[in-house]
Length: 377
Ligand SMILES: NC(=O)c1ccc[n+]([C@@H]2O[C@H](COP(=O)([O-])OP(=O)(O)OC[C@H]3O[C@@H](n4cnc5c(N)ncnc54)[C@H](O)[C@@H]3O)[C@@H](O)[C@H]2O)c1
Image 1 (cartoon, rainbow, N blue to C red):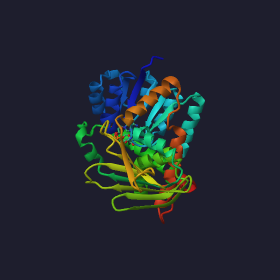
Image 2: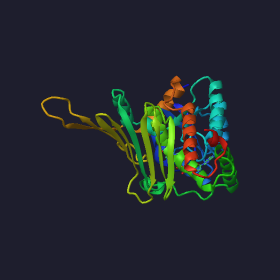
Image 3: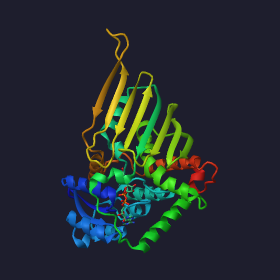
Image 4: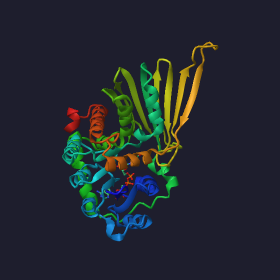
């Protein structure tokens, strides 16, 4: 295997155009883009031409691309659950770079784990870019020296996706997707949501699970897992207004946690903060909109001044990242494929986040009965 990994990209929509394709091109030293796939012929042509992918390597069907393109890795940027295509790739011995969420159900994650076991090497990287953020690494390093963390608060101020992407000059949304393919995928998503939540759940709850709890809040669920060991209990969850969600629970060591996810359509810019309070200070990470590459993340530290000449007082310091978390995760993917390195998050971590998400949705359901995996989570 040459050092440059041959990549195929499935799903050529917003995140592919704004983030992953530009970064794959930037990392020409690590990757060669050999194939693309989308349901929309117009996108396949436009993106294929832009990135120099020949016509015969532009596919409508991801399974065919995996079989025929000769790619060593597939970058999965399709909407919905990634279980089916990821499983086909692993069974074909092709490594998977998988955007969140891994899957809609734990059962799909189990099938992926089995396929990866059979391959006998790490073969799926679950792309939670916040786990690859230098400011988060700095936070973890500092937390290693702090033994009295009391509380962790996450706050997400989420404007529309369109407003976050206004700068990106995306291709117009395609209008040439085969309607049969769309209905087939919608039926498949429906079947998976039945398995996750029970067949009788309301459209509102299914939307909350797929698009908010697994679709967005999972970034924070996974961050709490990566930095603090994950929510051991979820003891409160409510939703109100325009799909805003609040979740409370406990992290290992009796640390209280709260995640507040506010959908604020006209908010000026996506903003996310993770704040840690401990006995003698606080640490706060502030993330900006994820689609702007090399957008700095800040870690602000407030601590008590060392005893000395001054009586009391505080010291504040700021770390600002310069690297790009999405690029860091691509570099990890390259190391996974070429050197067998375990990724920061893979199938097991994705499965844990799905179970936590199911515990959250069960509480969000309130009086509405929930079945499927969520009833047992
Ligand atoms: N990490 C992040 O911050 C972040 C941000 C945005 C999106 N995402 C994730 O990236 C993925 C894509 O999101 P997006 O916003 O680009 O969505 P999108 O709807 O803009 O694009 C998805 C594209 O995939 C194509 N597609 C869907 N199913 C397909 C299939 N089975 N085969 C071939 N093509 C298929 C669609 O035609 C569409 O062009 C999602 O999993 C989403 O959760 C992650």
